[in-house]
Length: 508
Image (spheres, rainbow, N blue to C red):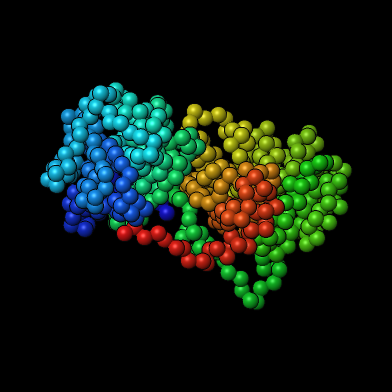
């Protein structure tokens, strides 16, 4: 699913109007009516008090349409126009008059004295500002947003929480509405997926308003939101004539005294995802642990308590390196020689990323399409600090472009960056915030590459399945009791889920 910027959305709106032969007012009516039906389906005529706050632009026009339908269906609705400017869009004026024609006159808010009483048990519909906002709300408009936030009332934002920017960071957090739920038009928005906006975006969903799909495709958006629809075509079904050699040989390098668990988890994950063969290269102290814990894997050993020589004999298809490896001097020196001599595809995680950060000259030796899987702190060691999440994405993009790398930045919406293309994941929950979760992801991605998946697809697919295990598991267990091993237990169900039909909630 594409993620469109505010400019791209405006272009798609205009193109759809021209191609479909409709007016902008008709498109607004269609979009806002779908929002009404979403709400009506859930409220079923309840007598809860609904406050609809409308700006004087097109987002406000959406609010006016919703208020009209709510009024016509017998809801207890009050509509307000937040009069922060003398300018009105044509679509706003049309729907303002339509609302008056059915006997519902909106209350105009000109200052703080006009704020209505809003109770905790009410519902607020936010249609003040849309995703085209370029400057922070001020004056009584900001005060209104603060007032709504302080009531702790449930707030439904239409398309975009008021005060939030689409393509840049918020400068005044007090001027942004904290939406309980957001109904956004046609595609997800980048701002919804960034950690810095967590206070303003709770839950959200996309309302398909019928913008022209071919035109959107022609925009070639570089930001993508990955759902089952995007994942299923990546899946490679097995051939009945295949054998274990068909599905590659994963070599997992890592471990140090007291940290053999990390490489154990990664090795298990490479096996579980389907790598035909898996070998582990570990210090001697990890030999018995791997042999007992992962009987399907082969094991080679290095020095006693830490890696030093990297002199494995395994003829691997792909190497996953870093889990539990440590960063002591002899490990670092051996790692440098390994990186300079290696020609095999790589998945680099954990301490291997930290070693790259200590010697950034090694980045130029990495094979094209090497996959790096940092968490935010590991990324910071690689690229330096950032002022906000938009700058962070710029730094990741530059790193990816400069060295032809695929970067998997782990987080709530883990993002895979391949050059200028970004793929934000839709699966996962706080259960994954547990020790060893990243090691399992390293093994999954490595195992997928071993089977012939392109590195970027392996990263996207692996991240999706990794998150999906937690989504499925949490139906039967608590976040707190989920461990990295649980990911492996639920990986089969995550794959099978790809072939189950989705049950959609009706809008009407």
